[in-house]
Image (cartoon, rainbow, N blue to C red; front, side, top):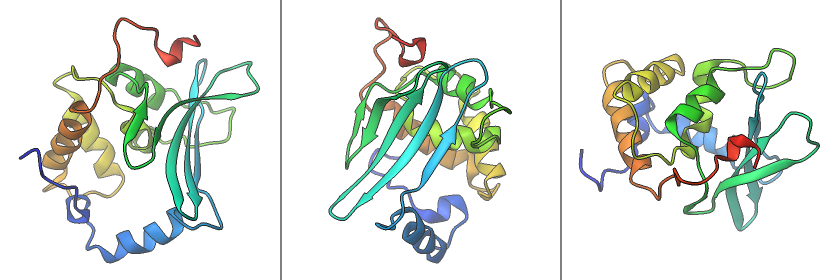
Length: 173
């Protein structure tokens, strides 16, 4: 698993044609894909695919109970920028769906949606297995899912890291 390995659709059980079809939906300039990930008793997240012609990006916002606005914590505009979250924070967010709110409830889908927020170089040994289970739930082939999980985590943990001395964006500060 070299550092130059690019993500390829086949790692996820895709022949490429499905990726093209999904891309047409996700990146349609007439519609923005928005995924709400409300959390029970704490901050939730919203993932927004910004599909402006000539200005594509993905925004990651946190929503806090009792607030009427969302906080932009990270974005992808060709490169990742923002605070990001620790593995523990991602798992807590994925594992606490709010049945009283509209949004993604499946814990595996929630983990996959917030995974790009991972900015933690110290993930537990159980992380690849947890991510593998989430990807399998989403349809990734079992024969490649563990290596795919390891590749994704290796890629994400090489980015600029979460500042462990600072406040977490989930703390509401």
